[in-house]
Length: 65
Image 1 (cartoon, one colour):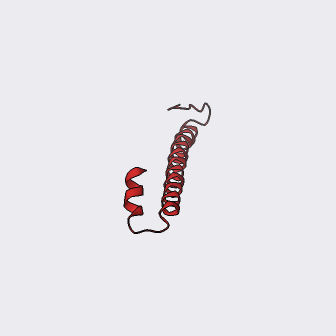
Image 2 (spheres, one colour):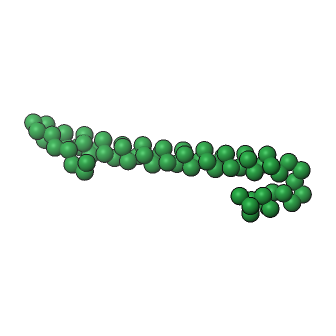
Image 3 (spheres, one colour):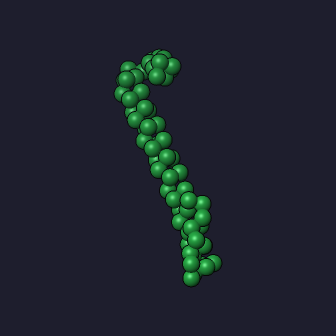
């Protein structure tokens, strides 16, 4: 945060609000990326499960769990 404060505070009257909004935006962005990562992993697992059901409908085997 200190480096950011130095960058924004030079000639910026509302430096604090800029830093706060930048911090909140980066936090929200990282949360979105994390959620997207989790969703894609869950989707891949579900895809494997569905493929395994299609291959053997009599006794479905769940792999990769």
